[in-house]
Image 1 (cartoon, rainbow, N blue to C red):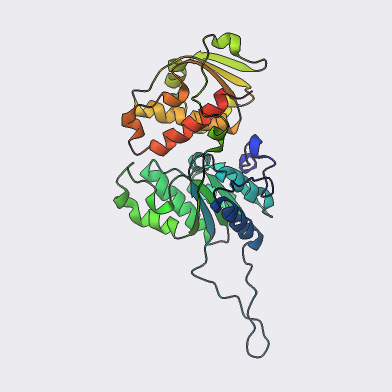
Image 2 (cartoon, helix red, strand yellow):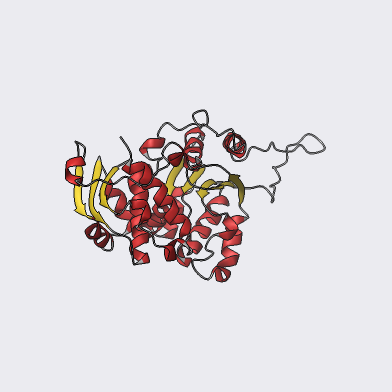
Length: 319
């Protein structure tokens, strides 16, 4: 199972050299350099100290040292690119997956089984660090704690700083201790900038009148949008990867705005998997970046919805 924890296809060749920082936002270049330095430093890089008579003493651990980097920023500023670049540059055993993929791993193997599987890994990369469930909060906090104590380091991305995870979603104060314990293990790096997916296309998600006629050649699907949303309720989000595997495009007819937040969140999870696999979307009806009513956009999942909106703009306008 660990063999599947690798960067998605569009980041298979991502490197620090191929990252193109926006000169208008100096933090992009500085964070790129800081992440590269973090990877190069590697675990256990401190030299052992010498005693008074020349004997080597064991290295004294630096309790203030960080065991991970946490990239915070808006959508489309290159966080996942830098995370994939860190994965490719790291030596030794390493894994790359989304937050939901790691929680699914715990669900499949159990907590201790996951620890045993990942123990000895030099770098664990976690993309889209989202804490929508208090149980996930405790599971990931425990996993990070267990693995950092055996030398594993972490690199993670999210759209919310670690200390704010969970705010507006559940009673964060009840889990403040766990959230803060996780936060203290990371060096948080803020990346500013504009969404590169919208820099060249200042438009909404594309729509067509004839979905079937607009679908490209290859392996494609054609479904009613509401039927797809309904089907997602019967499939665990960890299985969404298999749903989109080997697809070139998906066709969706009669897209409508969401009225149920649970449905909207399942759709966001599917959009993430479609984006990872770079599956084109051809749709009719409401533009897919406009399916979230104001009540949802003003709630605790706002950043999730905006990320999905950004991604469907790119997928519906892909050549």
